[in-house]
Image (tube, rainbow, N blue to C red; front, side):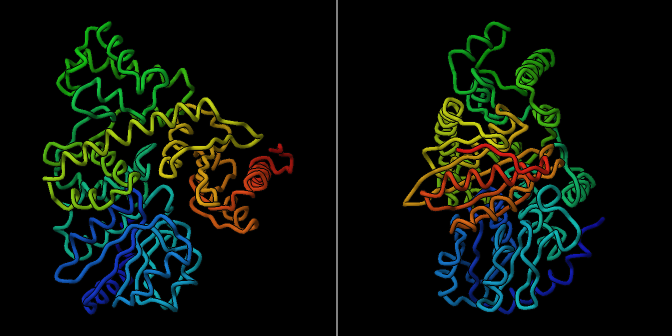
Length: 444
């Protein structure tokens, strides 16, 4: 599968539409994949008035506010496929999205991997599509690969190894003889900081505990201030094996454990996995503009970005430990509240991978302004048993006056706060039906 052929028709339409437009409005999803997609589009669209905004609230009322601006052309990135019926007669534009599509339309340029038989949950993300479009415009745009990889990693599509269209594009990078290096997934200015702020992997009792970590490192004769890549091979193996052992004790899935060692594509000596973490940290603090500027090449913002990373990790780690203390169990799901909306997906995803019961879906909730935002995460194992979070969460939310959707493995919803118990009961029931073909479920 080359990938390009299936998209060529719509890429050509998008290219011509951009050429014809004077004033372009880009609306991108607020996360690392959305920011990376926007950065690629920003780099390849020349000589146009370009306005970029990042969207968390995908409600029609919120989207309509942007449509009322009446720009010449709209580009939706990492979002929009669930809104085609709403958008198709209201806007001259394009959607580049990897989420399950509502439908296709003749009235909007709708670019989605599902139309090409490619999984948007595993094999292509928003950044994949933006990067592929950049290559369609000019093969020399392959140099934007660090931004593509930043979005891919941010969307967790590297876990278990690259596949599908992502793999095709990465194999093409290998043909360019770009330098790669095998290294540890965690990154920081030294090994202590790397482990201290590590949430991928999250190591209970060590992550966020500087004294414990420093004591352990000294006990195995490793200077906490040393850099991992500068360590002797024996010490690298010792650290890597210790991390793997901690994860094995938590019965973490094999492909997740294997992902602690990564192949890094070199970018001016920079680790693309750390770059993805930096962008994700900015995105979760509503500093997408900072991340966009940095990805676009503004190195003067580097210290701001690094500080945003540390600030984010401190809060995230606190939220993770709080969730561990307060989580509640139902038959087919486990749930907890987070104090910050932006942390819901990160906390649920981290705990799903590294700590909680992986035979149950993990759900994080955050209450704000009379509604509750819900973030759900499953595992590939649960998906193989029939779980589809996008479908189940969407149906339950809509039946209670809310809205929701997403992928089979990760999804979100917004519901009225008085409907939380009903939503959880509905979701637990639907998950039970999907997994066991039974209507047995617990009650809140």
